[in-house]
Image (cartoon, rainbow, N blue to C red):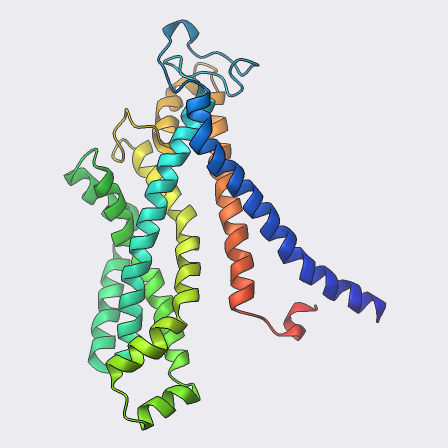
Length: 284
C-alpha cells in the first residue's frame, strides 16, 4: 500500500517537475535571445578574430567572419522561433478550420476535405517547401507560408478526430433535437471544445517548424544569408568544421536540441492534462 501511494505521488509530481524545467529553460532561452545579442555588442565582423576557440571573451568562440557565435546563435534562435511560431499559428488555424468543417459537416464535405489532406500529404513536405521558397528566394513570408502550407494537414486530422468523438456526446444530440443548425453547432459547441487540442497541436508544431526552417536555410533556400538563423549559422559553419572550428556548428546545434526538448516537455505536460488517463493506465 505504501509503495502504491509513493508511486502515485511520484506520478503526480513528475509532470510538475517536467513542466517547471521546461518553462525555466524556455524562459532562459527567450531572455537570452532577446537580450544577449545587444549585451554582447551585436554581431560585428572582425577579421582579426576569425575562428577563435571558445574562451572567456567569446564563450561559444567566433565564426569565419570574426562574429561572436553566442550572440549570433541567440539572434538566430530568435528569428527561427519567430518563423516557427508564426507558421505553427497559421498551420493550426487552417488545420482547425478544415478539421472542424470536415468532422462537423460530414458527408461529401468531409470526403472532399480529407481527399485534399491526402493530396497534400502525398507530396514530401521538404520538397514542397523547397518549391515554394525557390519561387521567392530570401523572403521571410515565403518561408513561413512554405512551412504552414505543408503542416496543417496533421492538425486537420487531429481536430477532425476530436470533432467526430464530440458529435457522439449527449449535449450535441440535445442541440440537434432542439433544432440547432449545423453552423450553430459548429460555432457554439464543437469549435470551442477543440481549442485545447488545437493549441496543443500548435505547440507541438513549433519544434518541427524550427527544424524545417533550419533545413531550408541550411540548403541556402530559406532566409537571406545576412539574416541570422540557426540554419544560416549551420550553413556558414559546415566548411569551417573541416578547418577544426567545430564550435561554430556544435553550440547552435545544442541550442536547437535544447529548445526542441523544452517545447516537447511543455507539450507532453499539457497533453497529460487535457487528455487525462485512467489511473489503471498510469500505475504500471
